[in-house]
Image 1: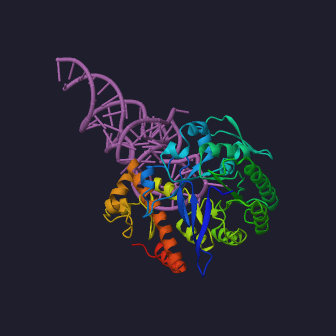
Image 2 (image 1 turned 45 degrees about the horizontal axis):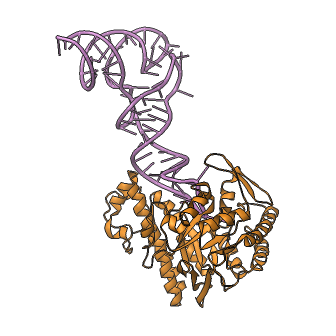
Image 3 (image 1 turned 90 degrees about the vertical axis):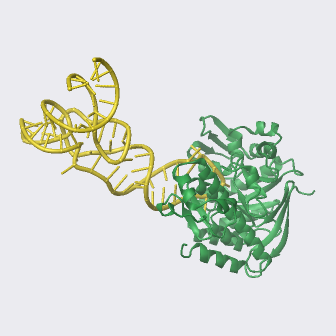
Length: 378
RNA sequence: UCCGGAGUAGCUCAAUGGUGGAGCAACCGGCUGUUAACCGGUAGGCUGUCGGUUCGAGCCCGACCUCCGGAG
């Protein structure tokens, strides 16, 4: 049977594990490596869908939505009545939904994990709920995303070896149940998630278990949860080798511009992260010369654009002085413009990376980026 | 002019006669499968002025200055 989402590998970088490919989805093709903006509550915060669609030169091709949040509000049944998440939020390109697994971890105190699933209380009204692999898939099928994520447990850092081992084994058993509950195979795909914390033997164990299930794609979960970056890079480096080359590899929750380059170099195809939009709402701009904290007084009288090398709508029309004014006054336009710029910056950076891989100069592209990003500010 | 009220951080206000605080603003930092337009830190003061009472006054008393309200 043909899967809803297939991966086509176009090219491999001769001097690193970086690769160039394409995800074919029911809502269009997604060129990889790709950064996926996060739209947890059926919206990329402070952005109109049409503006997300015109980010960079090619536009964002895929977004994230979240099972946990949409289940609680407005409820997946309502989204289904609306015609699915695409119709509900007016986004006709691809959507990937997270399973709610991460919330199991991040909403720590409100949950209770068992073999069956996770009992938790709503952070909104304290009401009691239960997520199981089956219910997570049922919700994601109601949402109608192109790529569903398996229901997993993202172990915290630090966590001891024994706990992580038990956790990853349960996550694999949950994956088997997710796969059985997955019925709309011609419309939706399901990715498995590798866990194992920072323990390489456990990562290997997890990889062997999930790859045996022959999923359409695999993600690396449980990283970027507080461990030092060097450890994350080291673990990731091995994880990728244990995943099949003909399937997409998705590093969940990453990242910052430097992490994107490090991930691509190690063979990651997909990334998502709240960082660019959250930083934007908190007054920080990502630029080719590093982060700019727009609340800082040094931008008061600076009439240059955020990034003189950027061709986004914001940089073509607004000055740092104006953006600082908006941000310090807590005007919503400040969050809107910085969100648009930051997402454009990451989407554009990924476009540059894809082009560099095609031209066999990924490592040069990376060095050039880092020299500027961490070099002297202008 | 008279009566009343009020003067404390840049602003709005706390502080039984016993080491003057908070919120906001300012300045700085943090944020990685969004409970986050959030969280944290730093700085900022001859308590309107001058006298008096008291061991001790932002606080009690007097005068003056300024502002607000009322009356005329």
